[in-house]
Figure 1 (spheres, rainbow, N blue to C red):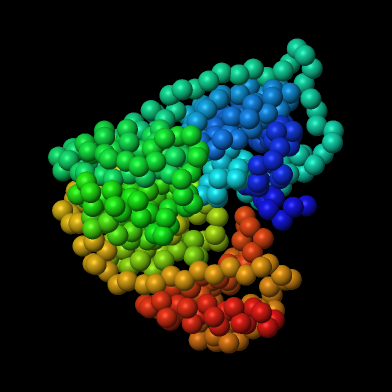
Figure 2: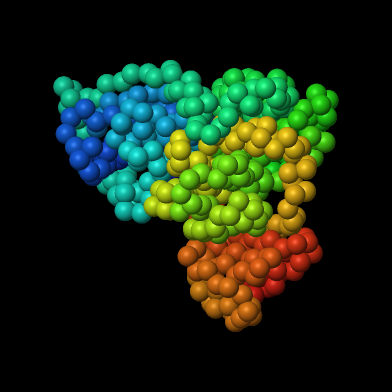
Length: 465
Ligand code: MG
């Protein structure tokens, strides 16, 4: 197996033409369709099983969609085709159509040569655990039960999914659309020629913003590494300055992550997206009944989220890394807001999926309500430095975990996902990646030298065990 082909319970990711072929995508889609028809509880049983299919802007998307739709038809599943869309839009479309599931072609923030397939369950949340393993088993099974000529699936298109998504964001309770519109924000936008150009400018304009953009085409020809990291947002920073924008917004190619540039043109780091969303949702008038003041995020999320939660009288619950873990815990705890430190905001008032349009609306709501600038909001709380490193994935990590626990006996230990060692103002998280053949080390501390020291010690302990 190639070392770039990554198969997990929530999907498949790899390089187009070597790891990923249309034949393979047709087979995975047929496997997913079989699961949707037979293994997916009552909703999926019997006739008339429908699967939603969407893709991001990557150039291989149309080819893979055609293959997947053929695979689904061969199993007798009807297809609702979204065409070019965003990951959160596809999740919402599955819920809207009460479909048995959804397939989204995207490699998220991976570079241009990649693509992938994500499996969405009937509740609009990515597959995990048993369901994902069942789809994988079916994909490896040579004896999928194909439909005969008289029971093939049909298809139809849904061209309104993005418009429904925009309207749903504008209807979010407590957003204060009128107040946002009154501010007439100037917003600079960079959608890296991904799907964001199909939704973000429209949404922002309907929030009363004057939008100036770069890379708003939706042709998938990413002009820069598409992950919205500070080092990739120089062009957006210059646009902010040139247009005197209040804020710069960057989204990743499938529009589930968002990062901000402040009014001086400086990227503030994607950790602040969730921190701002927490303040937007929990920071205004306290809602009645204080039992739900909980923020859910993963173990690698920045302490800026803890500080924002504390400021709003809320506590933070951490989960293993992976959108589905955060989503499930959010719903379980009925938490109003959560997400990931990588710019993924989940607001269950709309759905429990990372959603950059929701994040953008919440950030504008916070700016409108507080009257502060982005840099003032950043300055309001302590700053931290996050340092990330990757090392090749070697043998089992248990020895390294044991050695680290011994080395840092004073730390609070969380072993839900790899190993996270925490102190009041810093932490180190060591875990194998779900999507790449590497081990990730992430540390956060008040200064980058302190975070770097945690990384170096983590790295040397891992190398020695
Ligand atoms: Mg993404």
